[in-house]
Image 1 (cartoon, helix red, strand yellow):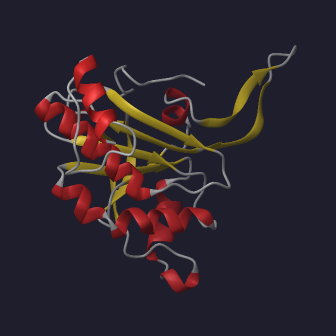
Image 2 (tube, rainbow, N blue to C red; image 1 turned 60 degrees about the vertical axis):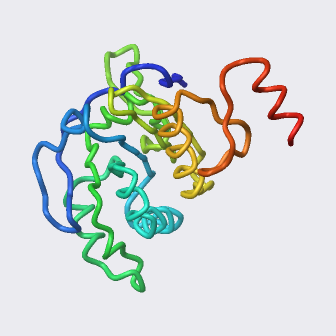
Length: 210
């Protein structure tokens, strides 16, 4: 699996559902470069079980992301019609009605492949026939992309393992703190806590106090 941290985030332009029900044809990453941090997260499949808990968890914290000038975008290999249908179903019926951040339709799986989070591979046999191995859906992956379009953080979980949204917020706070002050953030750092300068003296002083 590729490590994209420190590299340009792969660009995309694809169909998506925005605002909880509006289908758009060419939702792209490039529109945010230069003005927003982007949190892009992949989930395996619509109409499943762990996935709605995560989508609602991100929705519940959406104000916190937006107050940090962060654009939250979800992506799976389902179609835009599948996303739209799931968004119309109430929570009590297994739907995700009320989620209003964009959900990308990665039907041809190119976004998942470009971010190297596709669970499965394409193979060509001796007869030049293309086949797929594995379920060909996305892992539970998360990428934080800075305003320059550079990946600063990535996390990839297997299908049964849901993510911690508060940890994503903590990582964004750490990134923004470093961007603003040029300081580094030690283990378990949280917004408002002491950070460090990149020097042996600063590290020694921090460790002495903790």
